[in-house]
Length: 248
Image (cartoon, rainbow, N blue to C red; front, side, top):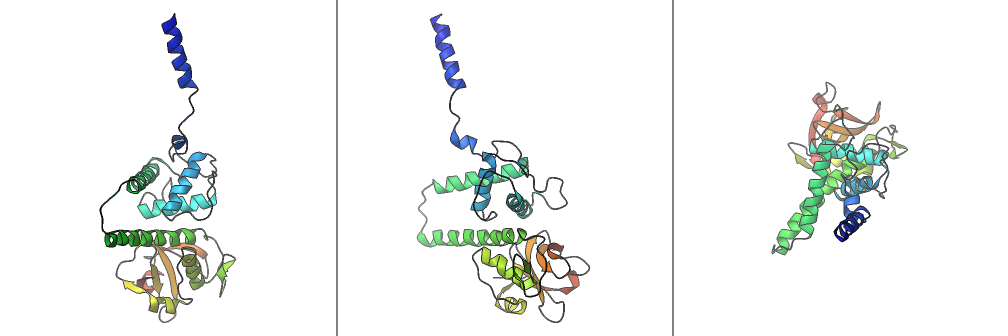
């Protein structure tokens, strides 16, 4: 009888044990995440996306438009999904594994002491900052999807093409020139654009239009007929007008 009571006591203790806080706040604690979800995993998702430069502003527990834009940008950059994918914007198994892996890698790095020289550390930090800045530019740009084209516009109420680029880079902490021709002159030319680089086009003589490369041969820009939208570089209109890419 005593043996039974002791076993029951342990069972009761296990039943009413307080769950581990870190487990409750894990990204995959609630399974797949979708737009409209409200839980602690959404907060963990936003924190990880913010750490990687995809999410801007304060975090919370609601999977809203900003979270959706950040998730899509992450999936596109990592090659997990694209606008044509059935689960674009849904944080499913593959996205969860990618995010959890990044979070684990980050935690391991932060808790491991190395004997690297200061110059080596500075190089790593510089590389990480560049990557985060590029991702931040794309994330900021995506959050303006649908904003109308306004000649001379430099704010979310309306952008022209160069005003849109200047605004997006500013949100990621980098100041760039105001006009497309000035950006072209100031940029370091690259043969193959990476995410966050500027792609330039000749639409009326010289560099006269530009967008931000987002991967998969696509760029985001403020077009006079589309407003802020994503376009394909290999389209019949843009392909013959492409004149090069530059890094700021």
